[in-house]
Structure formats: structure tokens, C-alpha cells
Length: 102
Image (cartoon, rainbow, N blue to C red; front, top):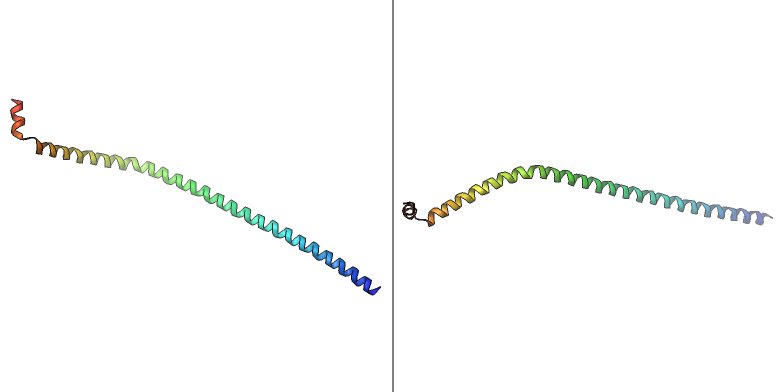
């Protein structure tokens, strides 16, 4: 009778330990899933923030580029015109243009 009670309590204890192991595994799984969801959320927010930052940078570049390009373009046109005029004066003799006018 004593050994029978010990065996019964041992089986009960073993069943309780198996239930506890199962519950601990389930809790571990839920914790890992929650952790993965937080990681996915943070990565998603990082990507969204990155996209918004890139859009803001693009907008600021778009706003500043045309003004700078206009100034650069005007400067380049002036340089090209002066270079062309210099080349024209080198290849056309002044006497020839005076004779043609007469």
C-alpha cells in the first residue's frame, strides 16, 4: 500500500511536470513570436522613416537644384559665348570684314 501511494504520487508529479514543460514551451513560443513581431514592426517603421527621409531630401534637393542649375547654366552660356567670340575673332581677319562691308 505504501509503494502504491508513492507510485501514484510519482505519476501525478510526472504528469504535472510534463504539463509544466508544455506550458513553458508554449510561453517560450509566444515570447519568441512577440519578439519577432516587435522586430518586424521596428524594421517596418525604419523603412517607412527611411522612405520619408529620402523623400524630404529629394524635395529639398529639387527645390535647391533648379536655382543652382540656372546660375550654372547662365555662367556656362556666358563662357561659351565669350569663347565663341574669341574663336571667331581669331579666324576672321579684321581687314576682310571691313572690305566686305564696303
